[in-house]
Amino acid sequence: SVAVGATMDRGEDSCAAILEAIATLAVPCSSQQHAEHTDSLAQEMTGALGGALVARVVDSCVALIAPDESKEPSTVLLSQAMKTVKAFMNAIPIPRVWRGVFPGCFAGLYRRLLYFLRVGKPSLSAVVAEGIQVLCLLLQQTLQPSSETQAAVATTTESIVADLQSLVLVANSSTPSTDEPKDDTDTSACGAFLVQAKQRLPAPLTVLVNLLTSARSPAVRKQATGLFRTILVDTRSCWVGTADAFMLAAMEACLVLSNDRDDDISSAARAVLKDY
Image (cartoon, rainbow, N blue to C red; front, side, top):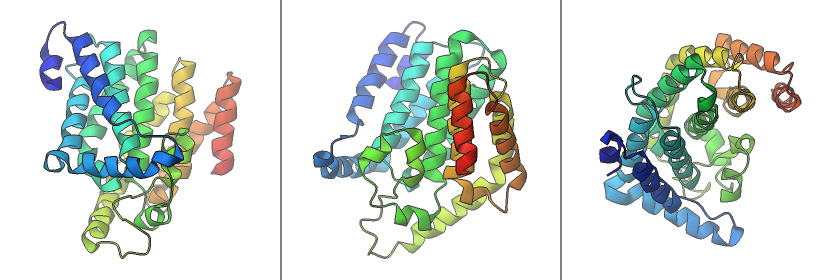
């Protein structure tokens, strides 16, 4: 129904309402007493429709985020599509799930962000900022090495729905406990994914990083500091030794924002550099 709504000439509001309803199903409980229920919900959603529910929702949202660029986008629909993807990422902190949908999700989101940044319309600033948040979550969910995700299994759902900076400890909840041996297949798949990520992601992300420093919108530049934190701090171990030029580009971009005229942006950029 989401995909059908996207093809309607004036069905944006209806489609956005459907996505909002879908997103409410994935909103995790933030209180400690409901943590067990939230973990159970994540596992049930992952297995729904033979494991295809998450992929179908994400694919539908990406189709709305990155349609034909010749058509004027509905900012309401774009924003809701991104919020829906974020809701599912927060509710299902299972890296293997997001690695499975990463290629299509990253490509669609990246293409749209690049287009919006180059167009530079003020009306699209909020959507761009939202898109950067989704990109940060996607990278954090998928680029954690297995040794780090095992150490982070005990992280509660509260840290998942908190500030983006706390997502460095996102757990690989596909492993029931740190005492149980990790499946060899999952470990192998994780290693293969990280190898491909190190080879393929630095070039497009470098282009995006350089564009963000010159964005006119303070909201976009503020979210850019979140992306720099994701690259330089949260997923640093993924790039060190294999993508040093990319790390340098991200650090230089962060240095530029550390002198931003907006005090909040400059402070956030300096905090990233300090942690780096």
